[in-house]
Length: 118
Image 1: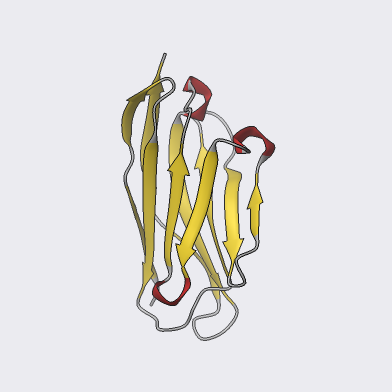
Image 2 (image 1 turned 30 degrees about the horizontal axis):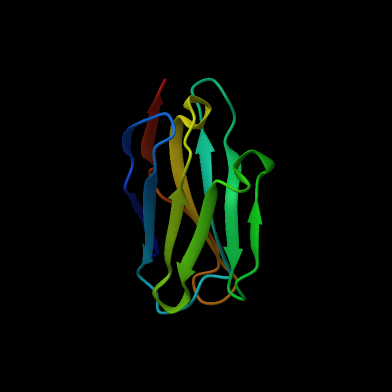
């Protein structure tokens, strides 16, 4: 059973930085893709950034140039370096791990809250 857990959220002022971490445990198989999603109150969950097992990265337009995603493939560990944070970045940030071998499927963490004060 794959378990996904996020950490690193918190309260930060506009212009500040935070680094989120995520670990997908319970398997020795590397995830095909891992990504960060966020959900603001009253809004749908949206993709922030993702990275594949070949280190191909993808970013939402609203974070390009500000956020950096990285991963430790064999450890299914994911990071999100968030810089120049804005109040619009406030929300719950969720980690997702997708497997096409072993424990096939898509797994979510419970989320970590990021709050950016004006």
